Structures are given as structure tokens and as C-alpha cells.
Amino acid sequence: MPRAIEVTKYEYGERHQIVLDHIQAVREILFINDVDPDEVYGEVNPEITPNSSY
Image 1 (tube, helix red, strand yellow):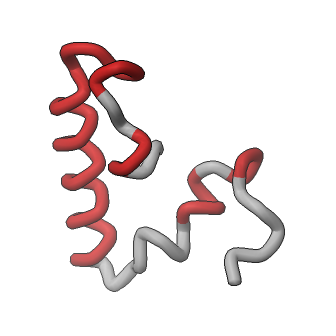
Image 2 (cartoon, one colour; image 1 turned 45 degrees about the vertical axis):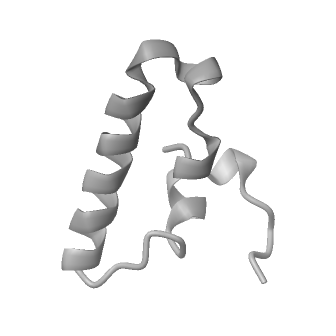
Image 3 (tube, rainbow, N blue to C red; image 1 turned 60 degrees about the horizontal axis):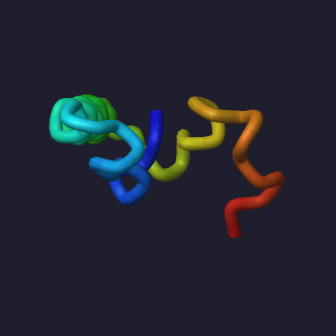
């Protein structure tokens, strides 16, 4: 899942707003389940996540 700041009209074309809406929906569901979306980013995209996030 891309971060919202990474979603641009240039990269995603006309569907960039749909992608932003999907990102927001996923973040809300994670928050409802007491999961910090920023903490699980590496679990969603392990191949592009640095070894340490601090």
C-alpha cells in the first residue's frame, strides 16, 4: 500500500483520488482495530522497508 504522500496524479492518473480513498479506508480500519498504520507499513511492504524505522 503506498503512502498517501506518494500518490500523485502523475503516477496514478485519473484514479489517484480513488487510491487516496482506499488508503484512508485501510488506515481507518487499522485504527479501529488498535493498530498503528505507520507501525505495520513494513509488514505490508517488507521488500521496500528499511531494517529500522527509528
